[in-house]
Length: 627
Image 1: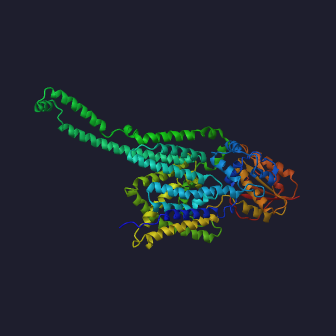
Image 2 (image 1 turned 90 degrees about the vertical axis):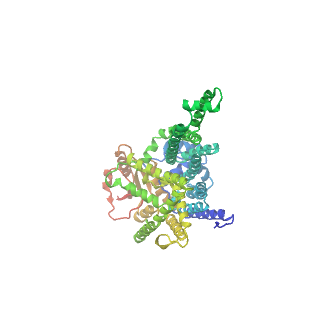
């Protein structure tokens, strides 16, 4: 029975549908959620501005605090690089692109356009749909797998979460997809023992260089690829050793029947009846033996690892290493950026030993399923959690069966092993960093971008097996294959909508809710004070100041105090003490994320005794300072 013939326009038309869905989902409600601290870093550095001019240890107005968010006509790419290298810990490629992109958009209340900044990440996120289609096609040569992977990428809640932030992760995902494509092609050349083309080697080096220039964690993807290549080398060497042992056995068996003994040679010379035949036959036998040994399969690992495919792979490794080393002086020179990753560095005590496991599980599940579990309505959150649990119990065996089928089929076994190896190696690296180096990478779900595309391709490959199941054959719980695929995709679509509505992957900071609380609570001038270590705390206050500026409802406008905190926490306490003495009363003091001792002057103010709701990112305490 021949496969049905579809019109040539169907494949590009379907791909266009997935692309339109992806763009729509990523642009809906793009600015409905306020920016958080990491996004403020993107905005400020991409403008070519700096956080350093923001005054510390003194009360400042909203306009002074938000000055780094104001575009400067004279700012250039050189300014972007200078401030980024001295105040952050990220490579510059995405920031340079954002600098050029944001020039196309008008300001909002004199501040940089948030829609303009986020739209670039959304566009890169949408481009991952045709990119994942191409990777799936290169990997499996199946239109079905390619379309299913593209469809799942279009509605992935994790992908939409990354695409709706003004950050560099969606661009990094494109480089991951491109690099994995090179890995897949190289794996086939290794299998066939054919030399890699120069264009592939050069492209792989350039892609890896661009990936490192986008995000340093792209090197984790390179580590997973290296682990997969080492596994392929080991597997090929085992095959060669086996062939070598088989060849040695065969040659020993043949040597016993080959006429090389003196008696045989004399008998042969007599048989030939030619003078000097013994000498000539001896030389011929020696030459044939050397030729046979030269043509025999290599029995040593060194011979296998110096075969044609591997020499070019070594060149790719060296070129990639050089592309990464060029950033090493910048990374080591930047001591300010070291303090920006303190939040993922901690010693594990008690239950904290198992929290990374649950954090990792949550990140894996939300790559394709995330209902409104973060809804403020408790009943909705509980119902969503139960529905997700039921869905996972139903879908996991279906996906696992599809993966196993792809793993045993001769035409898909190699690539399935390669992509699965990337995923397993990445997960192993994450837990190695977490448990052995005390760097908990599982705390940042966004870091899973280093292997996210491989998961999507494997998901598409597994769903393809389910899709091709006979209509008469029922999957788990009496649902046939095609219906199962549709249900899984619809679940992804509902999950995408949950993220868009901020009911899943909620923002870490909610300054909009915090400003509403201040407006309802304080009827007198307001001082908002926090401790400051890096520009992260400045970004926290920028979020609040930006909401006040856009709403322009509280009069007079609040003042902000960034009490700098170094090795001695008393410096923050002293700064707040001096500020409280200098301000005219009455006013309300809002201590927000204040991580220092409260000064004596606070005793002259009445603490607020009412209970207020908790707000993401802002732990606060209220004092009423009267005359």
